[in-house]
Structure formats: C-alpha cells, structure tokens
Image 1 (cartoon, rainbow, N blue to C red):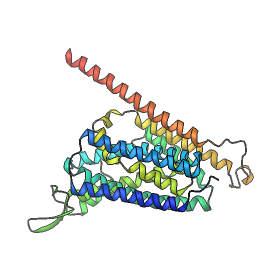
Image 2: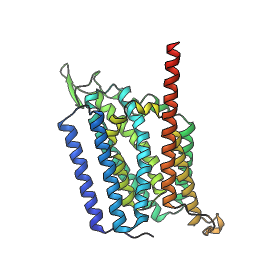
Image 3: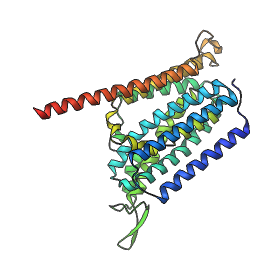
Image 4: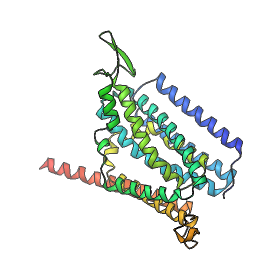
Length: 333
C-alpha cells in the first residue's frame, strides 16, 4: 500500500483544478472564436506542463510510486481522450456545427465527460473495495474492448449519431438551422429546439461510452480514486485546444486505434494478473492467491503506454507521408 497524500493537498488540488476549468469555460463563453494553431499549441503545452508539475508535487509529497501511477493513468486517459476526438470530429461534421461555436460544444462535452467519469469513478472505487473479483470482469472487458477497437466497427460512430440521438431527433421539434449557440429559439412564432441540443445529446452519449471504457483502464493502473479523478481531469483539460491543433491531422493517424487497442489489452492482462494475485474466487485455486503470477509494475506500464502511442503515431505519419507522395506521383502522370 503506497503512502497517502495529505488531505490538504488533495483538497487544494481539487480547488485549483475547478478554478482552472471555470476560467477556461468563461474564456470560451466570453470570446467565442476559432483558435489559431499557435494559440492551441500554447494551451496544450500549458496543460501538459501543468500535469507534469502536478506529478512532480506528488513525487515530493508521496514518492515515486504515487507519481508514476499518476503519469501512467494520465497518459492512458490522454490517449483514450485523443481517440474521443475522432468521434467529436465526426459529430461536428455530421451536424455541420459552425466552427465559431465548436469551442463551446467541446467545452460542454468535456464538462459532461467529467460528470460521468466522476460517477463511474465513485462506483468503481466502491465495487473494488467490496468485491475484489471485479478485477477479472474489468480485465475481460478491456480485452474485449481492445479487440473491438482494433478489428471491430462502431456503426453509431460512423455517422456521428447514436440510436439515442436519432430517436431524440425524431421526437424533438428541431429547427433546420443553428441559431448561434442557443438551445431554444423561436421560428414562425413557435418555440423550437435548435440542432445544438442534438449535438449535445450526441456528445453526452458518446462520453458515457468512453467513460465505460476508460475507467476500468485506469483502475488497472491505480486504485486511488484521487489519482483516477485527477488523471481524468488533466487528460480532458486541453482536449478542446488539442482538437483545433490537430485539425486534419487526426484523419492521418490511421494506426492510432491499434496503439490504443494494445494499451487496453496490456492493461486488461495486468488486471487479470492482479486478480489472480489477490484471488478470492473459490473455484480458482481454491480461493487462494496464485503467488507465482507476476504483478506488472507501474513503471513498466508507463513505458508500454508511451512506446505504444509513439510507435502508432510515427507509423501513421510515415504511412500518411508515403500516401501523399504516391498521390502526387499519380497526379503528375
């Protein structure tokens, strides 16, 4: 069991993070605009630096194991959040959201994601505390999710509209055009919903699906609710700016899904190993721990996560460059 952080540090961390999120939200509401590449890159660098400073403070207060768990958890959630961006791009395109208001949509999506992840974190921590066999379930779920990520197809994500949002679109009286960032407006003397409400529903339902995938993944790295929640906050902070910074580059990251799938599969195996190590299931080894099963260290997990994302990103960019070169040669013939 690793040392606990001082309560004052945990409370102070939550207060500072909430203030940063409020500042970010007010900035979007008061100055809606399309951020430049430079502006987006500076904000992303700021949030990444903030996460690294936070990891450094954890190292000072509780040692390397605690800091390592945070870094591994943050990078896992960050990689899954980048995957989330693909779906955001599809949703924005599907509903033709004006670029001027995409920042607000992304900010609301991030807040919704934090709420859902907070609920799942509290539920996950309570289940783990009273039912250690849940590690088997989490591990199996992540292995299945990894397979689906690499080789399956998400039909709902293909057009950016889930069955739920499709149903709500039919039931709600939705105007054909956006009216700024308003959810309700008046058309021909009648109050109607704008397409923005359907966009928020689409973002919200996809956030639920991503929370279901991401929370078991980070609980495979740490069982500390504080680390789990702060890692999620830091992963989601700057996601809006990352969306604008990457822009069309997202479509070129063809192999990213395989890198994410490998990370999920690795953590799934780690969870199963941990479940066998702390085994209490009667029909497995008589309900006793299987001591020879190795526990995968946090630092090994961190190395695998970084290597997986680096290989997937570099391979994607190399392929994209090769495809561009081939396309230019064909057009020149």
